[in-house]
Length: 161
Image 1 (cartoon, rainbow, N blue to C red):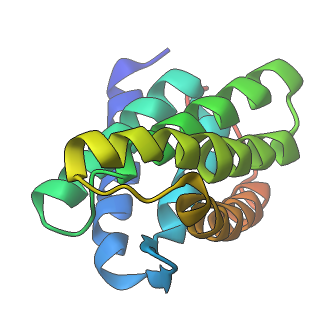
Image 2: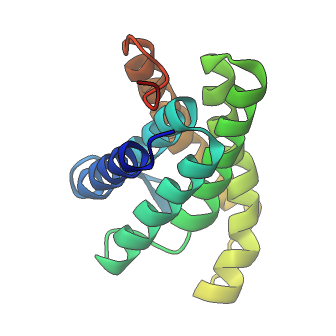
């Protein structure tokens, strides 16, 4: 595995995710939906694997927060979704399962993880049903975009020579 190539591809995904947060978003209930984040989760999970996908999701969330483009809720949703997408793709080799993993990981598990996260770090007492619908809208729309984009790429494994 070429580490320089891996780091470069990760940096490109991080840059796209951070820049797109300013451009492509829409209100979804009590949250803002960033579908490109979820598309990148699917694309990086398929092309790079679960570990790099989680690092990419963390870095995009961190940069978005540092730039005032997101909230702390970006962390649990993005990272869980990226991990589950990468894990399901690695185990099955099916891109559709990666998209499903992103939807389940970010839309449901990440939304449920956001409840105590929001209470502890943000002082809000919104319940799970306040987070699940907007997280699902964002993650499903982004997963579909990511699945379409990565299905058009001739080689799914960017780290091969």
